[in-house]
Length: 555
Image 1 (cartoon, one colour):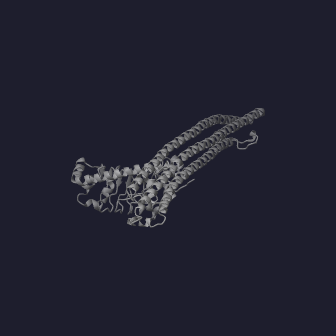
Image 2 (cartoon, rainbow, N blue to C red):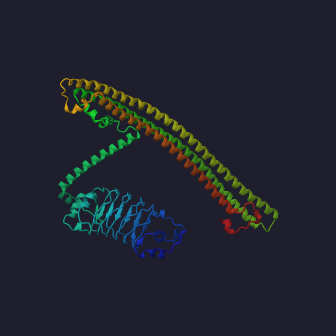
Image 3 (cartoon, one colour):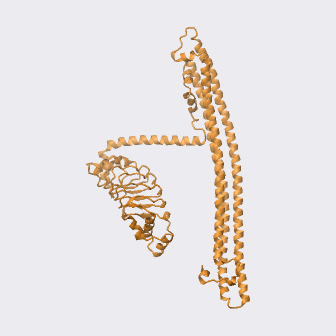
């Protein structure tokens, strides 16, 4: 519970300092509801994370701090202080308007997390460079007037902010240079307002005409950049999909090239003559075809796993929703019956007080009726609690069974895929073995032609000089097999680890959900029991001895 002296709390900021919780509470109270009821509510139990707007102005604030409790803030004003740095705003991810005007800020920084920001006001500071806004894609209004911006570089920078509609750069040195506004209007065409005044279309067209040639070149370069970015994004999206399918870099000849990038000798041997070159090309085609088939298989299996997960989640969520609907019906019935029983209890207990000086037998009858109502409510709670607990236990067991069925289905699905994948990797090894045998024969035939005159090409002398000329080919063969084996192990290990992690997370999530549900049920019925105890605080005490005042009966 907070009890704040607003005036004294705000006096904390008379000397340069930081934002404190007491200042925030004081401002929330001062800027909150004007009616007395609203003020009392704020003082009694203010929740800072519920605030949507706050003005922390004219308080001589030096450092921005202690704003993390304001997680749902949408509008924040820190104007007319002595702030030197933009900092400690990362938690305000819902912020749409930020006013830092009339401070001593030199650098635009630490705004990356404010990606919902639409209005940024930095009028009258000491900023020399417009920067640090890259993540503010929704920025609509920017006021950077009366700072120390000297050059025009910010114009091209602001061109990328396609949502920017209003800009104020007045009273900066850069605006005093002849042609600035024409340059700004020409290169930031999305602007509608400058210094909060609409930009005339004639002025805009005139500015564009003056810089037409440069703008055309700029637009051409921007189009190229956008194309490159689009292609890069498409590549990254595709790679992400293939990685999720565990067949990344198997759609083309990457694995083939990887074998030879790790084997320079093998690359040299493949270029000895036309025969070795043809053998190499045939090997590349057959090897890549097997990789492509494995790649297609991986995508198909990924689709099957995705569908299995979708169906699994559909069944689980349906079970949770059905249980929730039943539980809601039980709770509604309890609350409805509670109102009736509590009303009856209060009426009977009021009658009990009125009859105390009267007939003793009547008093006993009324007391018995009160006990009967209390017992009825306790039985209601016990029955409803058992029902909810039973439903939760049943759901928990069902989800555990569904999880196990899902685990078995997914394990069988993955095992089947890996079995087929191993067949493909065996084909790759066989293809490598055939290539190795072919190259052995071709190279030996080629080298035998130099046996008499010894005129071996320079780049083959080291290979030919080896008494066991086949050793070099064997080493090359082993390198290739190792690359194939490593890729097979990578696929197998990643899939096995994914399934293990996924199933373990399902178990953790379900146990957490089950514990939370049990706690909610216990807390709910504990609260109802407390309400009952307020009517009958002394269990086991003869009701004729209970002293009840009017306030108790009216609660």
